[in-house]
Length: 529
Image 1 (cartoon, helix red, strand yellow):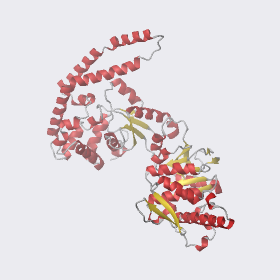
Image 2: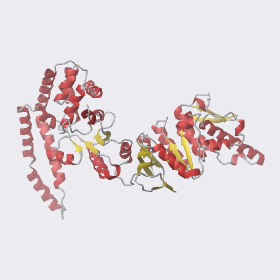
Image 3: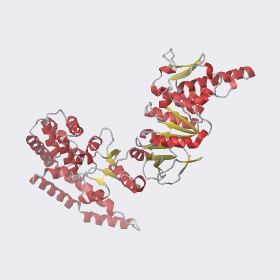
Image 4: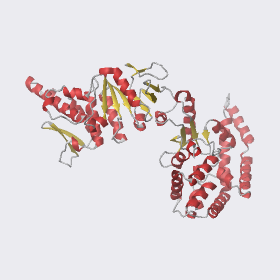
């Protein structure tokens, strides 16, 4: 099925071929709800709408579409004899029971064998329900539905006693069973009230239950949206109320990014910052949103994923009009590698890894001062500890840097075409002499000893990969705190408070990325203060 889409601000007439579920997504206030209402109005009686919020908890809601739950209920035989239902869910359950009673009467009148009857809508609803909730039973008893949970619990209860999530599941199953054949079903907030795993499981079942229907999901839930095998994703950017036109686009099929990454940024109008880490427990995910406040920050895990996502996203800049950057740890990258990444929009700090940012001089001084400690004394002790650790660890660190440099050089140089194995062996033998790992190692040792001789704390932070640096330096204890986690929490709390301490910390960190405070990306709010 091909449908016409609402008017576009650029005057372009757009159509959509419904081939699998469609996702409509956009920022709050972008006009996506109006967008789907316009789509429904264009489809007339081919459209059917389900909304968990309205269908469950809004007794005053009435869908005035040509085809709706209310109109179906009103046309049900003997509907007028029932007490007026309060919600769409109550209407749907009465329709299921009414249909069951009607079919039973037909079979008795015709004298047909009850064992050969086809599955009713109620049968199918109960089947899907028990697949979603295996320990639950639905029992039709004396013209009403009762539920029973678990074999050990003999008591039954009314659907009114269900949780909001369970009611949503029952509502959506029932509504989908009554959706007209081959209709376009608009689903508003399909994951509302439900645990993500339940929502995903439910709609997997319902898409199979009604393969004749075309589903259009309008959602804010990016996890749910990325769980759908969508035929199309419509990104609604903005709405021109005066012209009644929308700024929107259909995402290209080959966009070079996973749906998870792409959808994660579509709900925002801010530039995007891809970072390392797991998005929950990593220091990156906790710290960077408070430093680069004007960015939408998205954790991707590894540095390679950050680099690839930034490249791919910026390749599509003409489509989405959003700026994109990435942040990766410096690790043991040399100045050439760092310059290469920075030219491609990847921010690389002048410290080896994220833990070292917590050990920047101004960060330590600010935390110490905020805890009522003498910042000069605290920093002097921390610095002495770190320099001592580095002195002890110097040769191991030099070896790690040498190994990284050799590996990178080999990756870059072993890229020619060779006619036979002898040519490849000769090339590698030449590389070993050309690279000269021992000379490289000795050069690192000399440089590192110079840092110690010159008391160059900043250079040590730039090259020293040591995740135990924070606890090993006792910076938390010197500031009067219990441990590393308390020290990190203090930094985050100061940043959230957004006072003078936050300004000092933020200035130190953005300077670590090579920016001045006046031109650091993502700090417009600081500039306005």
